[in-house]
Length: 312
Ligand code: SF4
Ligand SMILES: [Zn+2]
Ligand SMILES: [Zn+2]
Image (cartoon, protein in one colour):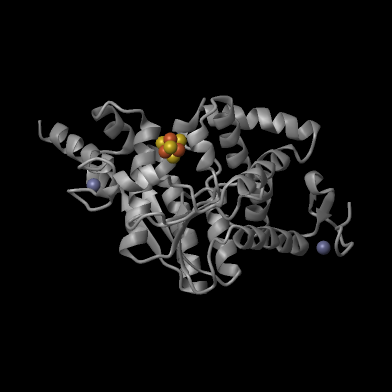
């Protein structure tokens, strides 16, 4: 198998593009896909400061690597969830990568440790406050990501969600006809109110397999295991179904998700992801000042309950 572009020996075949690439041409392909995503969704410019959410997995570390190599000003935030060996290993991978890019690009890593603030790791915290672990985790990550972006004056927050993630999420939303979520499934969500940072997903055109290949070819040392709490989740089931379809008909995920984006862009401008109703009811949390629809935001309520349990 030879590279479609330069005809030297190919290292990866991409059936959905009917192409094969050598390492150099594959890296160019990945960078081109990211550049296309940034441009088409008006994500950010070369002068803007980007905060990347990193987990130690291939997608987020690849995203940080790609943005820096493309000449963007990207720092990162890692939230240590305190999930035993998984968190220890992912933390080690993030630190190793962060040390390298601090030297090569002057990039900076911000850290937040759940246990330090909540007095317990994510699993124990979720049990204490009687909430599912993943929803507790989601609230904490969203909150900390937004807090660091606003406090440190980043222009935009970027996550490593890839084509597989977005197609699986879309399948879930369609299966349950969650129209409100469908309207918010854009890879670029503007900073709709003061106190909320803009959020983007520059890897939405690249598949999980392509990002794993990018990480391996570029010697990015990442944690291969998924978070243990993801086991049996609906998202993994949707991904399996889509993978089966993709094997039979290469390009299915791309047609599904990019087709949806195309239809959405014709339906409404990307900037109207927050409804007038949402905007009208948002105001600063009485405790932390982040935007919320209640007097106290859900993160502050969660922390107050955790502290009350710890004191009792
Ligand atoms: S699977 Fe792990 S990282 Fe993902 S939301 Fe659940 S606890 Fe958080
Ligand atoms: Zn080539
Ligand atoms: Zn608050």
